[in-house]
Length: 215
Image (cartoon, rainbow, N blue to C red; front, side):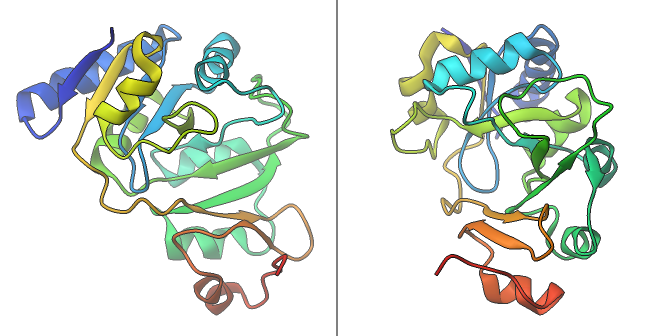
């Protein structure tokens, strides 16, 4: 069973972040809190770790995980082209619950699955997540649950579903907002909302004008 650390305790938080970063470097899985739900994370640049993440969730390569970053600079290094709207959206909503789908940097050596040359990237608004990401660099992170099961809003719920597949659980209590991140596709001429979430389309339009939706 993976070790769980209570991040409300400063000593445990410090130890937990150290252990989690070491686990990520070893290619193991960790569970971390975010500003939406708990995430299951792995080193984005270790293909076997990403495969382990997909296996733990019961997903295939056709559902590649998003990538979380601890800084805007880390995000831009992953992206080939932000397009005309990306920087304005980052300035307005990061860190926060907005995932941007962009064309991936073609020079990167990684394998997130069948991405079709894109990457979904986000900078979360959670101190524990940001501290970990600044230590590890970009992480492939998906919701900490088995595919088809409810997303975990506590470390306990994540552990019930994922068990021994995870090396370290960072427990920061119940997440304050269980609404998923909004996903916006910037790879087309007109930005398109792929998933409604915590940031409503009206706020996005207030920054960049038009946003296409499927409804």
